[in-house]
Image (cartoon, rainbow, N blue to C red; front, side, top):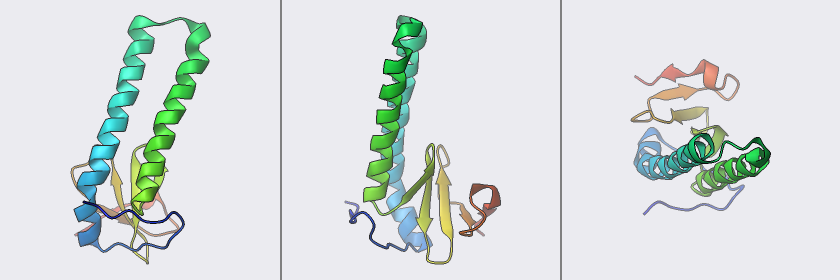
Amino acid sequence: MAEVFELGRDKHFTLASAKSLLPVVRRITKEAVEQVEALKTRVEELDPEPAHRPYYEQELSKIVERWSQKILKLGCEPKGLWLVDFDSGHGYYCWHHPEEDVEFFHSYETGFSGRTPIL
């Protein structure tokens, strides 16, 4: 079972530890993505009423916030929708759904646009 870290506690990952935690991150993310897709289907097919839109936007925000909190509890940093950074102490190992593995790194300064493949 994956370790759970206190919020705000410094946690640094090696590439190996980021990769070992990835199955948990992927499962949490997959569940959230499926919830968003189900909500999207409900809006498009079952309830296209514009007056209900604020309710669905609120539900979407709740799903994303729950996902974000779960990722934080693992010691990772959610940086965008389905985007997770693993702090290495000198930059971030980076994973974005639906990537299969942790295959990218970026500095603290560059962010997602500065991702480079891990060789």
